[in-house]
Image (cartoon, rainbow, N blue to C red; front, side):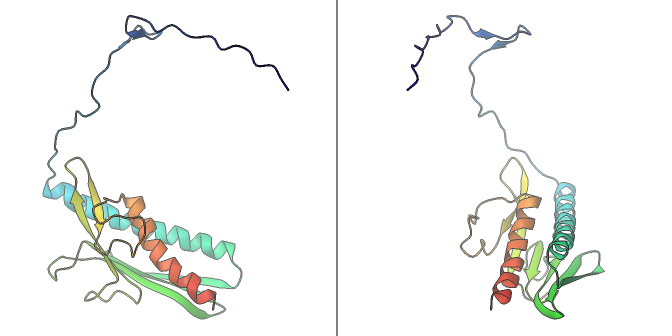
Length: 179
């Protein structure tokens, strides 16, 4: 057994801490944020950028999935700038598909919609709405993720939204492949 060295106590300075750059660190609140307001332009750009992020995320994930699994093939299609579809095939048989699109919100749907069938535009399995918390814009899942860790009030980043939708899509693929 090794002998322990006695610990030395460090005296607490009476003055504020000083760094090598002679910056004085003084205590203060970290709660200094004031509410921000977001313009229609900010919101329109966030919707478009969010959708484009999801499209790239799915394309890259499908490419990587195909590289990792022999006998697996993928298909994706962009019928227009505001939608895409994708499907996964094993030995030529479809084991999963989905459609994701930007909604115009005139039908009472959210900003970005997901269907496990295709781009149908009149029904969905999940819908995400752009929202803000007074500090940042993000997406809120309408269905809340079917018991996933996403709280209905949680704002998702573009990456969080993409992962949420990929998880819904890929869970079906995994279930069908395990049969």
